[in-house]
Image 1: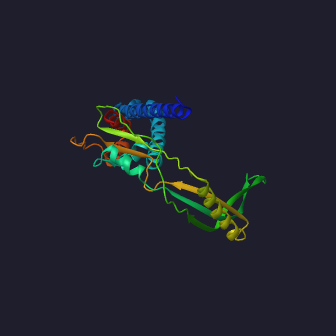
Image 2: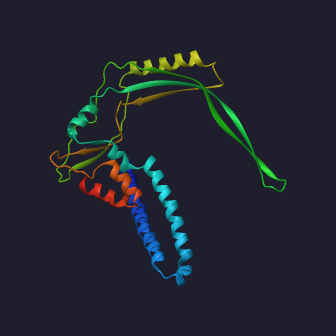
Image 3: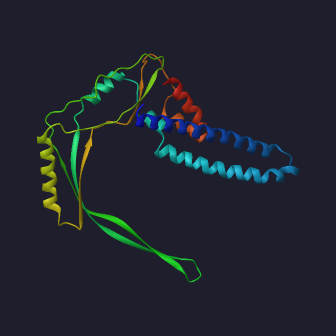
Length: 255
């Protein structure tokens, strides 16, 4: 097992552990809320501190979960990129045939210092100086690509009784000849000589992408079966109802 596979495997394990810990805490908090509602009025004060503590922690955890849903959720990304019409080999072949895009980006900028004074209310305090990048000019040049070849090898899918596959894609785009390296270097030199006096600092970077390629795909393997519960709106509902870990378990069971 390579280092990257090792890290990915244990990251997924930690993610699941954190998810189920959160789900168990949700259940425990709901139990505390129901218990507080049902106990006699005479002894409610005995449960008040525990009730408020658990409720506040649940609200913080709930807000963090909603933020995670909007920014980092792998399940949400999979459900956004669900593909029920094309077979996995068709999806892969479409990606293999995509023409890569190489952009040389020139950025001219300078640093702006933001000075902030903090006072402790007793006549003392301290000052911080924070540098901020201010971009004043940006120019992008595309490298003309006349031929390209995918060398990732033959894609084979093992026999499975699952109906979906969670596909994680990554890319590595390399220049294969000295002429291409020479062309990139020429463009970088031209951009530098053209724009070096526009501002105090200049940076030139090379961006390599494959158009329309996504990192995660959820691809249906069996077209005959219908799965009404596999959609992003039900996942959002499960998050709102604090049942998202059970929904993730369902997705993992069918894919």
